[in-house]
Structures are given as structure tokens and as C-alpha cells.
Length: 307
Image (cartoon, rainbow, N blue to C red; front, side):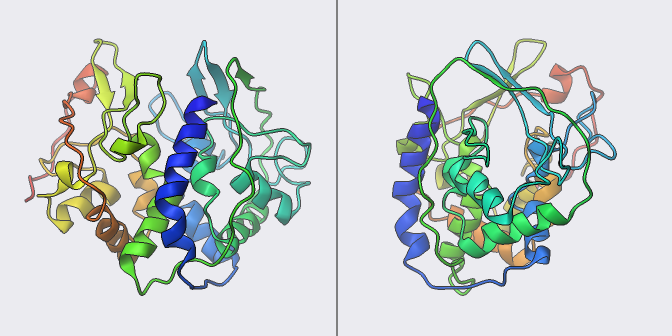
């Protein structure tokens, strides 16, 4: 997919030097894997199917089947990443899971296409990738056969993962950059250019169309460069990330994975905020819409505004 190729090249050029020039380490553990999967990596945001009201389907944790319909370009469903032997990844080795996460190849030599954020995960450290694989092998297996994807466009995988250690937490900007990459923040928060590909020269400037509402209005991602959030306090940013509530008190569109980000430690969220402060500012005034009204939902009590 051309869009995927372009965002991969842009992200890699921005992040690789900072990530792999630093030496750090984490333990390879199931607990670390769970922390990442249920936290900033947020696998369940896509890999757990949802009910019509957008809540997660009970008993289907990471069982796949969430649809992304971008026809005529593609129609795909997230994979079952529970260790079910027939419909999930139960027969995969840990190394095969790591390869799929970071490089987009399955044991059957199939390539994983959009919307898997491979070009972000490609920069995941060796320890963290293995920890995630270990955790996925430890969760309850759920049988859920997912339909095969349909791609009417070319796409590519990132190539060999650079590997290496997890950046040290002692440098919050570098570590925050790493965490923001794992959280693939810029996949949604980067505008597209005239060809439909992510415009990495405007990384983080928002304006990407997330959903067209029944009333015809379009929900677009926010500008998270300092031009958009530079006058937000750290507390306001923290609330937006972990609670899904904007500075003015309105509830953010639920594609924002705050349900997962809230499981991250305060130190990790602070590191992400420290990194976002360093992103080059890009002016882009993204119009806000009342998405709840657009979906015909009753208004919810907004939270107090913050500085």
C-alpha cells in the first residue's frame, strides 16, 4: 500500500537514530507484554471486536474480527491473536509472532497488510516485541474465525526490524518518542497529501478524516504538534490521553484509545508528553464537530475546562 510505504519511510527517518543510538534494557516478561498490550500499544483497540454501541464484546478479548471497510481500496478484519490453534496464533512460535508484529510476515508466508501499523512496530525493541509475544501466548484462547481480507491496492511490509534495546527511561524525550511510536500516535494524527498518503513533513498536524457522521460532518484527528497543543498544560494533555477528555471538557471521539492509555504509568505518560513538546510545530486549524450529536446520541455531561 503506497500510504503505508510512505508513512514507514517518514517515521523511520525521524525516529531511528534517536531510538537506537541509546542503550537501555527491559526484562523480557509476560508482565511487560501485558503492560504494553493493554497500555500504550493498545492491541485490543483493534483486535477486540465491538458491539454496535462501540463497547468491547464480552469474552472476545483479542479475538479479532473488527472490520475496516475502505472499499474500493480494501476491506479487512483484524486477526484473532489469541492462542487458539485453529483460528488464532496457537501454533505460532514466539519468534514467528515477533516477526509478524515487526515485519508483517506470518508463518504461512503471508504478508500482513493495512491497517496493521507495521512501520511503527518495526521499531519496537527486541525485549518488548518478545514480551508481547510471550503475553499473547499466555492469554485464554478464543475460537473466532475471521474473514479473509480483500485488498485491491498494492502494499508492502517494512523489511527487517532494526532491533536493539529499549531506550532508557532516564531520557524522557527519547523514551517518550519510543512510546509514542509504539502507540502509533502519528498514524492517525498526520494529515494526508493530495495522493492520499501521509504527509510526513506535517507529522502530527492532524486533520486526518476518521469518520463521516450520518449528518455528513467529518470527525478529524487533532493537531498534536506544539502549534495545536503548545498552550495546553501537562495536566490537560494527560487528561486527554488517559481519560479521553479535551481541554475544553468535551469527550473525545472514542477511536482515541484512552481506555488503554489509562493503564500506562504516570511516568510513561509524562515521557510521551515531554516528547510531544519537541515535535516540530505545524499550523493546521482542525475544525471541531459535535460527534455525539452527529451520531444521534444524547449529550453527556462535559468535564470542567482546563488550562
